[in-house]
Amino acid sequence: MSNDLIALLLTLKLALLTTIILLTIGPFIAWWLAKSTSRIRPFFEALVALPLVLPPTVLGFYLLIAFSPNYLPGQWWQSISGSTLAFSFEGLLIGSIIYSLPFVVQPLQAGFVTLGNKELEAADTLGFSQWSKIRHIIVPMTKRSFMLAAVMGFAHTLGEFGVVLMIGGNIPGETQVLAISLFEHVEALEYQQAHTIAAGLLVSSLVMLIVIYSVMQRQDKY
Amino acid sequence: MSLELTIDYRLGRNNVAIKCQFPSQGISAIYGPSGIGKTSLLRLIAGLDRPVSGDIVFNKEVWFSAEKTISPQQRRVGFVFQDSRLFPHLDVRANLMLAYQQAQGPTFDIEQLCGDFGIADLLILRANKLSAGQQQRVAIVRSLLAQPQLLLLDEPMAALDDGNKQLLIRQLKIHSEKYTLPMIYVSHNASEIDQLCSQLLLLKHDGNVEMGHASTLLDQYLQHQVEVIAADDKRHQISLALTPEQYRQYKKQSHLLISNIIK
Image (cartoon, rainbow over all chains, first blue to last red):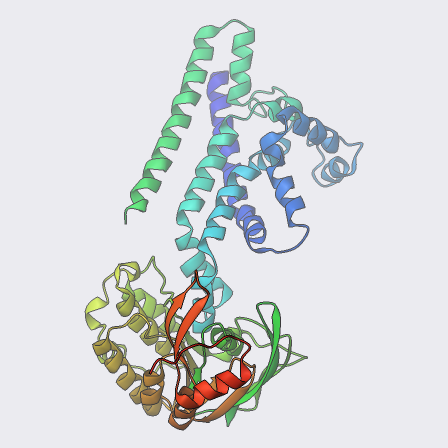
């Protein structure tokens, strides 16, 4: 297998795992942000949104430090897994989760705010359990937000570069993702290969966005 | 056997104290001018909001006290909201079935209930495709299917035409008796209350409450009501229809300038 193909598979694996994990934890964070009236909410809201404005290299730099065996998170990881987090796929996954967090949490939060309380109160008076409310009301009524969150999280992770460069480096099959591969080719003046990757990322991202937006538009009309 | 409330609760910026008792059978009404807190009171009974302090006790079961708060689910209080609140993403049948699944030992015949309330033809329609009146009838059937031990209705007929109102009034009466289901009915329509309710809790402007026989209390109260004929914002003037007795009373008590009498 060529390096680029390996990078493609690794990128897809990373994006898929990141999206799955974010869709598991994201709804809880988004729910709290949507419903809480706590005074500390703006702090956590800012924290979640931080990756949107922060240069990825800043995030990557601090993650690199946290991952090093000299500090607690890195130490802890080394003691249970026997390897370091930095320059590993697991480290990359953690970085991606933080990096793509706002892209998943924000659509969900917006969905939960729009959902409001009315149907949920009706469900309360009908005797619905928490689980029934989630299954029959919250998730179906915010389905669009979940789809948008999944696509945004996935597509954004595909294009990850700065964070990966800092914490993952460039190890084929372990941390070399497509965007890094592209950078490599350009540096080596291999424009033909660079074109293939760049165009591939461009087209696939565009297609994903077109698909999700047309699905959302179609649902508007029911 | 009754629902007893002795509570302080917040209404906007004010604290309101209320002490009252509803019989645990038949249909009782809550009546009063808008903004007086009728809906708030229902929400407290249902457990959707909490009072500041006090006790809510239903048939010796403590729903709220300083020590504990029972969730709406455990209270099994049905609530028909002013804005029906059907689940918009589901069809009528699914709305009803979800409620039916919550019932403890279902006894209702869904088909019959849908026939009684005239919604049998609507079952396959999406909830958000219904008219306001249809939605409200589905909402009532839905809350009945969950088998509440008390049903609260918050102005359920505001969106209904006269024919539908009569059907609903008849059916509510029948079902309250048939299933010995107590209901509390909020409205500011005196004739609905007169037809439907035996007991009445009257919430007054001055913060007092009065509980009693519905039609008697309504008659007394309405005699003292004043009808506004016209209001002129620019000239800071309103025209009222007053009985001679009311006119004398206003003249004596009010600081307002009262001019001519409209006969």
